[in-house]
Image (cartoon, rainbow, N blue to C red; front, side, top):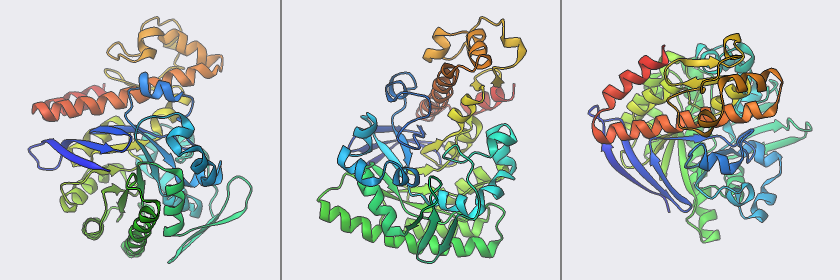
Length: 407
């Protein structure tokens, strides 16, 4: 069912504006996709994600939905969208990143400058995609898959490429991803090479099993994306992109964790090698400046837990003042909007003083209102980027956004 149309391009030949058509609706790209890890965007109702945030799609997590409530519950419910009352397109990642986390890879990622900057504080950087710290040593990866212990009750489970596809078919998202091995950014070349070789073998197995299930189910509603890995090594990124790009995928994910200075270059290397006519999703990237650089270098869609995680820690993106911490004393008597240039329901209806009060009083509404704003900020940023690409003014747009973020 997936159809991708390119509607405009940047002069550099990488960045583009497009349109992804799925069984449950259209995604105009570039687009930021909010993360609904456990079939919920934390602290925000699905109706608000659609109406107040303006999101076109949501992404959920295979690992967490497998553990709770379980794939059969989701199958019986009619799939992820019906289960969580989301009527638009849905994504699920493969669970590979969680396997990486459970091995202790998060420790390596937490040490990176990129993770610390994205999270804002070391405490926040200790949270992974599930927004919970995950202990090391709970998983073991081999050539056939990954064995791991549940973070809920310690029980032992096994993901193979085929099992990941089975689970994602039961969850029923429009766009699903292959199981991959995500090595930490600090991994040496030899370790990254081993990881991409394993990722490529798993990708082929995922394609074969996805086609088998689709034929058995007599359905073409789900589209499979292959994931490119390779860390910070240009030769491995390009090799992985060529290998994954040659397989029969509907689109592609760009995976891995990055040092801050590597992200834009790595995305560009990958997009230079991937087929032009298929969408590209940059996994786990959502800081405003990084979205702009990702778009410029060829990524079409993005997801990240950062906007809601930061919101729960009283931090907000703003268009003219960069990131603000609403707990700062100066906001206690500031009766202006959080961001006077923002049209979200939080900025239209609530003051900085009220938001500061909610967080100081430890009221849950504070996290909800800031989450709505932060998500809306990123969704609108990508919509503005799309408009700038189509109008031929992206360079001016990029310069202004990056300048404002530094204020």
